[in-house]
Length: 410
Image (cartoon, rainbow, N blue to C red; front, side, top):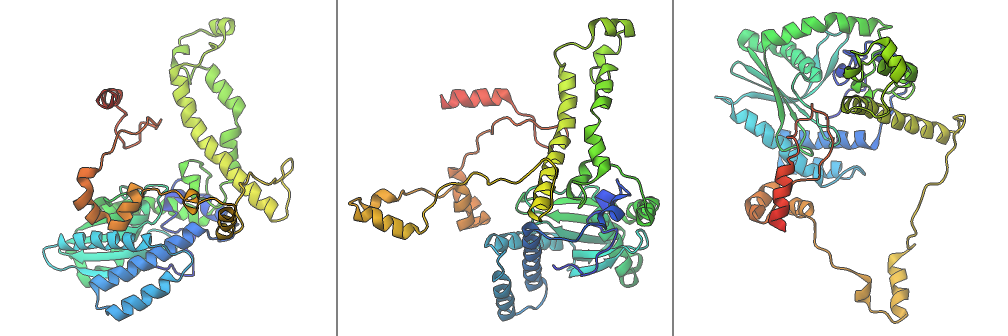
């Protein structure tokens, strides 16, 4: 599902950023539009998904399908996993189509225009489905690092507004509801979905107009936060740096008792006498964990930028690149093993037989067949406890369940 060569200043995919930080679009415009292996993989996976969807929903011949798939599979970014994720994508589309009382109108790769709400706003919607009183849009995500939710997702809402504008002349006022789904099969078998009435969606569109106009006109207001993660200028943004380098402000924050609420009741004289306690309270630890998380990510972004800068022949004062740790390896394994055998060792001693992992077996059988045939042979023990913020959707770790499992295994 290739994107147009022209890029919108206020793209739907970056809406989560410019709606929070109106200075971001013009700030990012200073940086070149680069690409990564992950982006290239995603583009290829989208193209394969589109091909599979066209095969199911249109009259693509088997010969044409195989021919196009062969071309796509010749890409250096291709992997067999992309065929399975494409099947999962089409399975989701089938499920949505079957949910309509009559066969819906379905179209792929829809160029939508949402400039009624966002200046010069346009983008590409992976799939649009319309039937009865409901318009459904689907977006495929190939990434497996960060789960993307459809709930309150501005990218999906902008696509939906654009789709409504495009199909209003055809369907008129028949469309009363909008559903939005994000299919991210490498992370979850279940798609994330959100639902709005047309009135709710258009009201949201009206509400963001002033913000979008400010971001388009500039200079806007910098507002660092979690949305900085995919900003092109994240490593060189002064506002983000200021957020993480205000150590004196943080010290004052702590002294005033704002990190440790129990200190608020102390008089200034008492604070001067006893000072802050030598041990952090649990409340302070929780607050510092929240602050440090973004600090660690910022440091990684700085490292990435500095490495790329030095590799490009420039200097970062006080820093240099050195050779990282490497492991020895045979130049030619076959020739090396041949030499070992000539020394009198049996060939069997050079190899070990290892069973495939559960994931590899599932990939071999396919998820559906694996679920049907292997369920009785699979057990999923409770994982090791991992610290996470309360906003995390996973259930809290149960120490009782863990202890019981230990007794069972004991």
